[in-house]
Image (cartoon, rainbow, N blue to C red; front, side):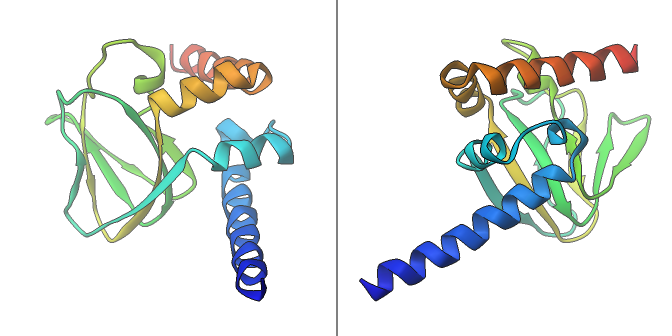
Length: 147
């Protein structure tokens, strides 16, 4: 019983930390606390070491990435951009049915990333239309701003 209570307390703290992190990312600023908690259920975390590839140009785009710490370089062979913490990248995977990444993504230093698999997000959006609406709205606004 005590072990379950302690596990619950630590899990609750981890969820609170994940929600606080999501609030720092522009895409998720308009979401409620309850909606963000639901999104945390589909987050996966991974540490990438310096110079480790996250994905390569031409690979199927099936994951969107949220950079919690460190730095990531996006490169198409001609231009390079540095992604800073509290930024989302790889969102093309959410917009197109059969798309590929157009750039390489490589950690410049040890980096902690949160990942959301496209299939998991689509499933959440079907179960929670309010979340789906907000995500589509933000992605379309971002697409419009880049045009």
